[in-house]
Structures are given as C-alpha cells and as structure tokens.
Length: 86
Image (cartoon, rainbow, N blue to C red; front, side, top):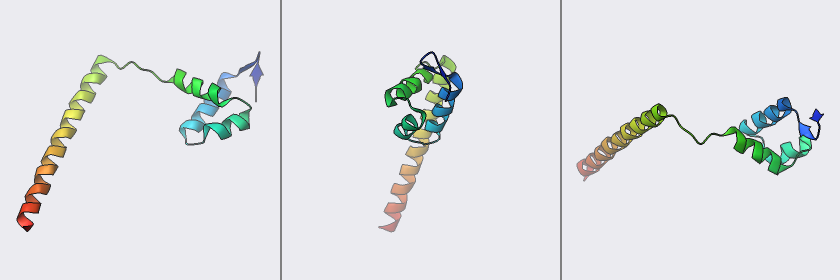
C-alpha cells in the first residue's frame, strides 16, 4: 500500500473502488488495505454524480414510457389469455 502524507494514493483508491464495484465487501477491503469503512464509502459517494444531462433525462423519460407501454400490452394479453381459459 502506498501512503502519501496520511492519504491513500489515487491508484490504490481506484483499485479499492474497482473491487467494491466488482462485488467485494467494503469491510473486508477496509481491513485488507488498512483504511476505514467510512473512508471507502466517502470515496464511493465522491465518485457518483447527481446531475444528468437534459438529453439523458429525455432519453430515459422516453425509454420509461416505452417500457410502460410494453407492460400495458403484456398485461392485456395475459388478461385475454385468462378469459379464453375460462
């Protein structure tokens, strides 16, 4: 582990975050690398963004509407098949 002035090197942080995203537990990685769970969770929070571009918002809204339409169609088909059986 590379420690620079009481800080974890960027490469080590990225390695830890990559392992968390791959499914390893935060607590086991914290023990393995000698850092606190809280530090890892703070790094994870820092890597996320809360802003979505307007174009991405429109794309997601359109995709959501299409999925709702598909669910509606499938629901109607299931109801029709139930009525045919009765």
